Image (cartoon, rainbow, N blue to C red; front, side, top):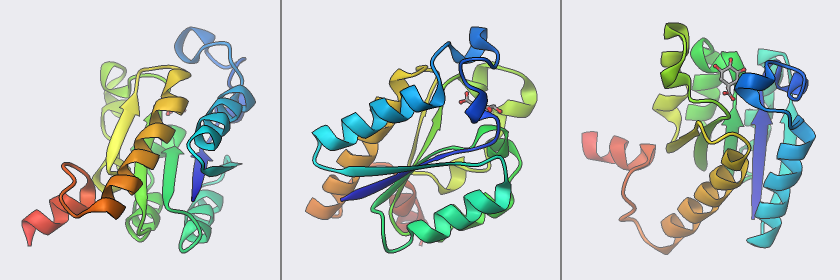
Length: 163
Ligand code: DQA
């Protein structure tokens, strides 16, 4: 099965950018770890980074029908992008929101995520370890769903409960 990892604005600067917050590792280091984790679980991983909202929206569209899961660190677009929200909402597979830092413990503007309402779950505040954890979470959730309908949590279950 196939998983798409999306990285939003300024994540291409990881390693140089605010190392006290985001660490010294570069994006390629995180992507390599995520890809190795996916491979160890028998999955393939494809990564896209963009500083442009529309390109990320298009990457989510391109995931439709091709990927079973999307792991997304949308950077600051997490807090603002309703177009990314809508694109992820139209994606049928598992969505995991990922952050290196813990936005809930930072400035007030980071405490709102417009990705969260269309995500199955969240991995945040774990630094680079989050890249492994989010891939494991996405894979396990896809597998659990394939095995049966009664999977706790996740946006699909919440929607079903509301109906
Ligand atoms: C981030 C958190 C966001 O608030 C911030 O804008 C980023 C990185 C993180 O990984 O911790 O660019 O998504």
